[in-house]
Length: 553
Image 1 (cartoon, rainbow, N blue to C red):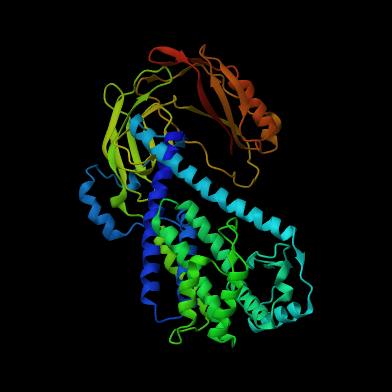
Image 2: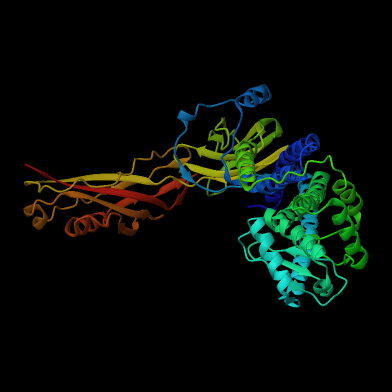
């Protein structure tokens, strides 16, 4: 495919996904804002659903069939001035791949530049995420397991309380001032500083409960998904807002989980403040890290945990699963939605030529939109040129039909926001079909019906002068085959050379009787043709010859 056409397709895909993501994240923002009386866990679920939906939209858009609403299609119909041809009138033809590309180089290069800029932004955000994941792996590799009995018992107890069945590893890093953090999905890891063994029982329980609540909700996986959404939609402010809100609600939901476990709000606040004073958040902490405390969030978290009127309800896994299922079912029609008004109409023109380069007049060109199945038709002029004045952008199937030439189908013609696009199509000369019957007296042996469909005759016309047999030798029915009651059809393929001799003669149906095939080849090899002429010049042309051996009673 042409690189410029590919960049235009990518840009159209990005615009489509961005519009849908805007609607999805804006809806999540409205629901989360209206859910202030609800718990932080519920708002976290709303933002998580929006993040996952935004990440899944590009994949679903490519996977699910397109949906063109009837009302939207009807509304856009008056703007389509092209003639519609009934689908039933189309002729089935052979396939050929053609790319229709924009003829405006400036516009094409601008769109390609936009795609390149998007790709650079994507790589920058992804590289930051990959670097953070590498640092997390390095921290885990250089940390040692925390085997203190008090920590082991506390982790096992809280895992049972939160119904965490995965094995959670607690690692101790030598840095005595690093903030506790959590990462991992299937084998989650909690990394604590070197002074963790000296913590009191309350502080130890608070830290463990906070970090394990992240693991129970799968917060680290969701945060990585948020970073991927920021990478794909790095230009979209709502993507960054959603990622920030997801992190904020995640921390508050973990705070609520700690308070829900029986820790007093005052005690929790004092212990958290003591941890922040003693430890620090490294500036090199990856963006996908879930640390116990971030300075920018502390004031809001302290105000929330000391507010006795807030709803601190913890959502069950069943509620989260039900919400995810409903969101997925609602996401499918959004991903499949195609709005015709988003398509840009433009001129699509070109020319039809024969193998010699001469233009072909009066060829029929049929364009079928692969999404809407709408068909439009025109014919080439005396100079072989054609044009469609108003083709909506999209993916088309192009068919060119001309008497005397092989019919071609271009199943993938891409028109993306094109004001003007062009295409040159070369038609090959149609194949010739000959048939001869060889009849002998005898009784036919019963044989299964021959499978397959016989090739149809193709008429030669237009600027092509058909070949004509000058010498035709009649095949002789083999005596052994006649005595055995053998009948059948032998399909031969040959190339009629420029001197009129059959070239490259071969049997097409391998199931034919060998004796009948030998008789057919011996006879047809002696045939002589008047050469096929294209615009007065001799050319080679394919031919199919059917030799029918029949026994008459």
